[in-house]
Length: 319
Image 1 (cartoon, rainbow, N blue to C red):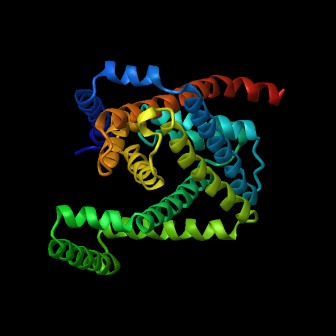
Image 2 (image 1 turned 60 degrees about the vertical axis):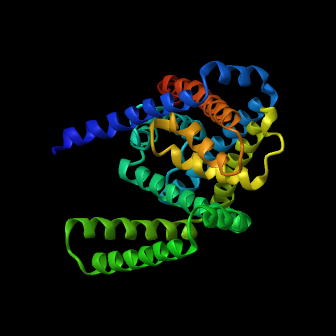
Image 3 (image 1 turned 135 degrees about the vertical axis):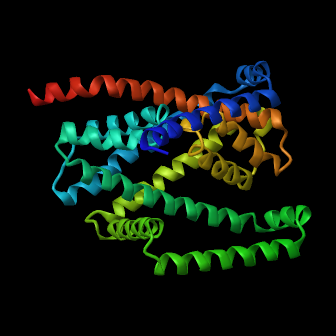
């Protein structure tokens, strides 16, 4: 398979999966039912959720500057803000193309070399991954009894034990193979892991590391709060527990990687998570669509304005 075919598949397959999941979610709950939930929703909570999402993106733009300052680049906040929103918007068309565009915007308007700008984006993604793993750990701790009971109810404990043993052995064998092998795959994994470790360590060696850590926690705090606040717009979810919110949030976060911007996959992921707690599919899928649509609307508006205004803003500043 040549590179052109691989690139086409990377674009087409997520879109096809998104279309299928849109059809699947609408086959569970009709569009008219979703519109009924939307009409009955409290728009104050939805707008508040969008505002919290905006705060998280503003914080992300501000945090990016901390990574670039040690390299000798003091970028304008407006360029950082517009580059972040351009990233999100472009990712709706071609997965992960936004990150490349973000580094290109910085190279074009702030004269930061592409490889350095892209390296900081990779480092911040590592920081985000660490926080996500921390959230998963907290969720497992808070919901341990429920998750354990849920698994035992559906799977025999002996089978779960066997699967865990197989998983541990598989990881150990892969680790030994990658460590000793010189194949292309092993070298790629080693390079990735070394880059991962370097990125993690760079966070703790930067000049304003505590400010960076604060903004990282703030970003993810806003994400979770945004998710919870928007759920309050739907009457059937008023009494939702923090454990349900966290599991729904984790499931929805992973769904964004499955399709372009989470189209189709986002509502289905929330429905899958909420169904564990016995929440009906109608409010679950309706909430998923409301949550996804409100945040997508914000990204389209700010992302579109950013792409249009970037050359105008920088032309004025250059003059």
